Image (cartoon, rainbow, N blue to C red; front, side, top):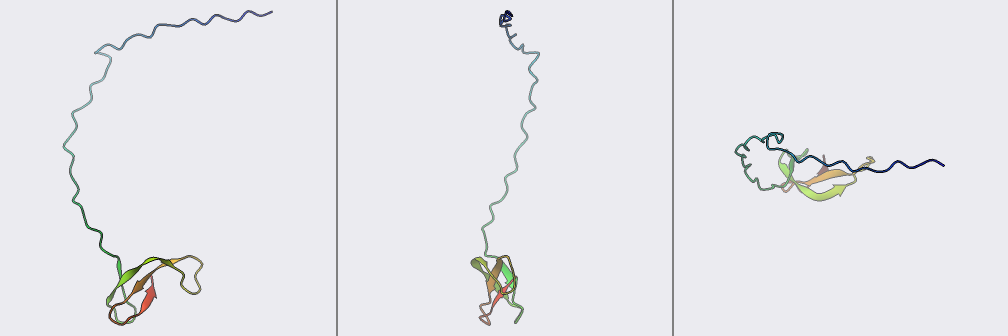
Length: 81
């Protein structure tokens, strides 16, 4: 029969202060201004006025994937982007 080698635990050396690299001081973090979300708009193909996005995705006739829809307030047209 074969003998199993004995497991010997090796002591882990403690890190010395010289071995630990010093991290550079963190630079000042620039705060980004908070921008309020505005509804997306797109130009109406009928009257060229900006229409407001209709919530969610919609299927335009003849397309396989849903698209964003917009509604023009001036001429009451719904169009797809």
